[in-house]
Length: 118
Figure (cartoon, rainbow, N blue to C red):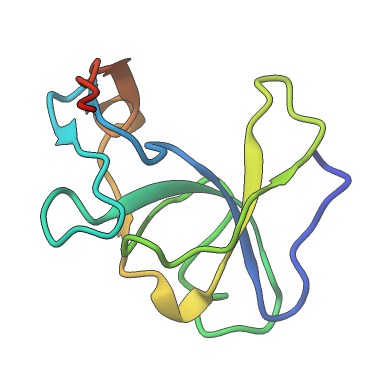
């Protein structure tokens, strides 16, 4: 993963709690809420790299857990990651804050089975 770095005005990060219905290890239920006006909207990412010249360069660093509003990221792209994670480009202006608590609270513990209606 050391072979990819962020360009000047970007932030690259991995999803910690990807979209979809589930429960985090901290007990927070995340809903699959694309296109709906309910549910958990904030998503958390672990920063891989920060570009050298953007609005968050002095505040955000690799390894930080950042809060980003729902839908405020680009499509991910595959990288050579041991856990097959995708890397996402985050607009620095969309970073709402930095999580200072333990990562375990944010991680997805179990997916919740959802009923399909026809």
